[in-house]
Image (cartoon, rainbow, N blue to C red; front, side):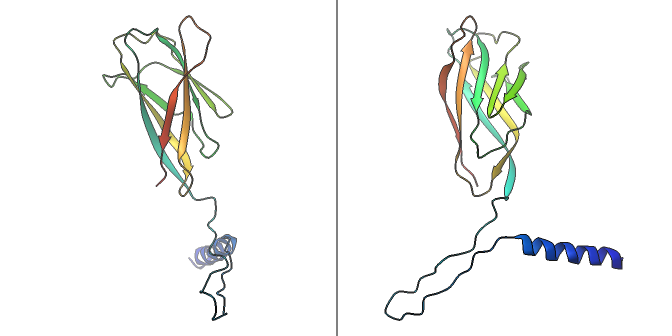
Length: 159
């Protein structure tokens, strides 16, 4: 038990010394307003794991989707744990490939024309707690075309 307490106290001391802290000082000149030169710096390693879900509307007379391409920002780490659901809430069969910050979701089976909404759930996304808004750029490829069609952006605020 003593050994565990020693390790715990050493770990606590090491953890406390590794947190970066800025130095603050107040100006003492009475002729000027009190001001702080600098303040506490937060470690950039404060991450949270979230689930980010967005919905795509598919035009009824459009060609079936072949691929959905998601360009993730550099501020997040996205896993390949992704679910795609139709408007009935049923999982759609997909293949996922990740190339750098680009996620390519391929639909091996044709998505039926009666599916007018697709729900994309990005599970286990790591994002900074106090970071900027996360914006994904979305594009698609349809059956019979090799052109990448921009379809919009998905935006998520940090909290």
